[in-house]
Image: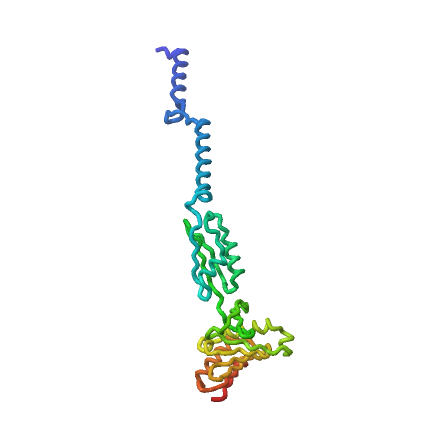
Length: 268
């Protein structure tokens, strides 16, 4: 039997090659995706511009997000009105444009009693001022008034009457060798260190902190009792020794903790 002719073999090869070739557009037989036309791109660009412009107008140009109210919380000696006046927040301005750092700096500059202040945007219409005041740990007599000193040795306010429970600093006289050597500011810092180390059971009983020199600090307590503290060094150890002495000899009038490992008590 005769085999296929040359023409027949060529026809079969052509059919096989055609069957193996994938259809146009990929295995799914779909058409290739078309890139968006120029009109679609222009429309997307216009929409983006409109959205940006609308957002900017809402934040800066509309009346929806403007400062209408300013609130102050935290002041104890100061009044809220004093804080608000110092802050000088631009009411009516866009809330987003208010410089909160500048407001905080202005409050601290105008009100030295303020230790920290935080200006916070409260959307949609409020600036809230959170204030923490300095607390006096010592008083310095100035004529008939008193200068308040905080735990960082900052003189922050002058008041006409002494706040309750705050001891008075009695500094060495102007011709004292210690004052000439260390200066009033250094001796003040040493006195502040002592007040920070006092045990709570004693701190409220202290009436005066007498600084004769760098290493001669004496506390005056109610009832004419005294505590020889010495220098401000080893403050925690001295505080523990003083508590122990007062428990062991509650009727004593004089306590010496300048050498905390060998404290002494006398008087009754």
